[in-house]
Each structure stands twice: as C-alpha cells, then as structure tokens.
Amino acid sequence: MRKLPSPQPAQSQDKIEHQSAGGGPDLRLARSVQDLLAALGVALLIGSPLSASPELLQTHCADCHNPDKAKGKFQLKQLGASPSAASFDRWVNALENVETKEMPPEEDSTITGEERRALARYLNQAIRGFDSSGGEAAPPAPRRLNNREFANSVRDALLLEDVGTQLPVDNLIGDTLHHGFDTHGPSLGFSNFHLEQFLESVRTVVDATILEGPRPESTRIVADATGLQYAHLRQNSQRPVRYGTADGIDLRDPKTSVFLRGVPKIAASGQYRLKVQVVAKDRTVYDTRHTGFYHGDPIRFGVHLGDRVQGFELPDEEIVTLELEEWIAAGTVIEFRHHSDAFALRANGNFKFQYAIEKLHREEYEPEALADFIQRGGGKSKRTDIDHWSHWTEQWRGGRPRILRVEVEGPFYESWPPSRTSALLGDEPSVAKARQILRPIAERAWRRTVAPGELAPIVALVESKAGELGEIGALKEGIVALLVSPEFLLHDRESLSESE
Image (tube, rainbow, N blue to C red):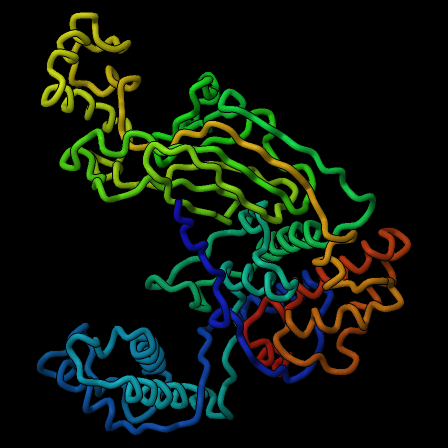
C-alpha cells in the first residue's frame, strides 16, 4: 500500500518577526486584557519603505475606477493625493485588495509581481504616515493571534511536532472571518473569556509535554473486530451501540468512524506502536455512473489521532498490516475512518442513499438474484417500495475498508523524563535555574531577544509557586505565563508598549 503524505504544519508564514520597544509581559492578565480591548479595534498594517509612485495606480487601476466605469462604486480620485480622515478606510481597502490580488485582478491586468509589491509598499507607507490628529504617524494597532497562528506558535515555542493529539485547542472560540481572511484585526475579538480559553489550551499542551513523577508502565491492547465499535452519527444517544463481527468491521460511510471498545481515551502520554490489519473490499463491484467512484481510485483508509491524520491507500482484496509509531497525548481518542469520499457525490451527500445502488446493480447484472430477494420479502424495512434505500443496507457491496484486528502498545520512552521534557527544562531542572530555563522558551515565544530584566516578574512567579506545586510544577507555571502574556498573544506588541 502507499502511505499518503501527512499534512505538514504551517511554518514561517504564521510566525511574526518584530522587535519590541521594551517592556516585559504584564502578569496582571485580567487588567491587561481590559486595557487592550480598545486598541484592538484597528486593523494591523505592516509598512515598509516607500518605493513606488502614484503612477502605478493610474497605470493599473484608472481604466476600471474612473467616473465613467467606477467598478465596485469606487473611483480612483476618491483616494486623493494622500490619506485623510474621510478617505482613510478607502486607502486601507485598496491595500488589502492589492495584497490579496483581488485588485488589480491577475486575469485582467498586466501588473507584474514586482509592480504589485511596489504598489503595496506605496499604499502601506502612505497609510502609516497618516495621523488624523495632525501629529506624528500613528503606530499600527496590535491584534491577537488567530487560532491557527496561536497553535503554530505554541508548537514552535515548545519544540513540538504539533500541539498534541488530544485536541488541546478545540476549546477556542472560532475566529471571525473578514472577506474570507482570518487575520483582520478588528474582526478578531479579545475578551477575558478568550484569555481564559487560551490559558486552558496552554495548560493542556504543557501538561502533555512536560512529564514528571513515576514512569508509566507499558501495556498492550489487542482487539479483533468484535472489540471495535462504531461512533454514533446521530444525536440519539439511545440508539444501540454497533460492534464489529467475527468477519470484521466495515467502514462504509466516509462520515463515520470506528474506535476501540472499552478504550475511549489514551491514559498516559508517550510513544505508542499501532498495528492495524485491514483489507479493501469490493472496489469494482458497482458501476462508476452510479457511485461517482472511479475504478482507478484506490480505497483510502485513515488513522486519526486528534487532528493528526495518517492516510493510506489500500490494495484490492489483500489483507495488509499498517504499522505506526506516534507520540500520543493522554486523553486522545484513536479513530479509524474511510477516506474515499467519492460516494458523497450521490443525491444530497447523505450516505444512506448509496444503499439503493444495490437494487440498480441487480436489475442490470443479477436479475434472478433481485427476483429471489423480492420474493423472500426484501429487506427488513417496513416500507413497501423496494426501491427505497432502507431495503438494501445489509446487501450493499460498495468499495470500503474492512478492519480485522487492531493492536496498541505503549507508552514507551527512550529516556525518563522524555526528551521533549528535557529539551525544555534541561537534565537537572530547578527553580534556581528558572531564568536560564525560561529564556530560550521566551525568545521563541516572543519572537525576539529578551531584554535584561524582562523575565524578572515570571521568575518571581515561579519562585512563589515552588512550595505549592513543586519545582517542576512551578517551572510549568512560568512557561504558561510566557504563552499567555501580551508579548506572545499579540501581533505588533511594541505599538501597545509605546502607548502604555
């Protein structure tokens, strides 16, 4: 079988490089959030030196935005020679359109990539130089990290492959999109509740990364298909739980999933070995014109560890054993899914309509079997119409993965504490080394060099918690404080520091 490439985490595009004007993180977080709310209502605009002239606007924009055409009810002359109180929003919108390539549209314009960048720089500097009060240029307003940036930044600060398989950021409030973009400052709200959710997420990630106490014992779970069960697709919790049989457990619907019976969540964080015995069944039984599933398309099977997904292409009718080694966090649900989604093309995408394909297939290729089925009373449905899908749920033979056996063994550790713990705390962590331990984490988290004295409040916090939480617990609190500080959570934090 061919393993599909795993989704790669976003890299540098979500890391924001900037130099602070000074000032360390304010540990009085509730007060800080309230102080920031007003400042977060203005869009973030990152400027760069002026290197283009207004002629670019005339060359590439005037043909569509003049008094005769005025596409989008916008005329170029409405910008004026420079931003004013009346035209400022138009300048900002123009910059956004140029940067996102909405304007000038690539298919209808001769603008080059270099000219587009030059035009964006011209608009950017004009905006940054505007101050409605007539004073010096107003600094760009800070905005909070969106959820995607937050997860990637936590990952990078803690030297992880991802934030974890236990879905530690699922509690976050969904980001509001502005014209499809999740980086628009005024649309990204920030409240005390947001801060509480960030705090909860950070604690969850840190607790699964920095392990202490006795080394957990390794266990081995082996389950045939009778030890696997289907997840509910409906909200009706009274529906009987369905399990596999001696023949296996079939993943028919791409929207359903299967997990280990009696093992709802992984108990201890660590390295695990997974073996899944699976076979691809009946890929070519039905015609493509009925299913939308082409005969050249393989059956795809997925192992889901939270948001981390390992996908595989399965050979037809051949039992294979898939082997994985993964760091899995405590609280993770191991799920198995059918990744071949072509069947969703039928009817309205509800998989139940696929079952009626069996009737169409028998009419064309197996008329005697169809007649015999009808004579014997059809399926179990109370409906009289034999065309209805409910008669054919047990007869359906569409392409699908069938799981035969699952083995999960772990946790394993190459050392104790694990290397991901010692990478952050060192080999001999102690509160006395708090400044030394926290500095490299702070520099990754704050995206800059830490100034002398900036870590003093957090070191003091660690020292104050040592008696209550122990040395490792106190150091974890220091790391949490770094990752919920304004220096971490806010873009362009230096503009806020200048105004405080």
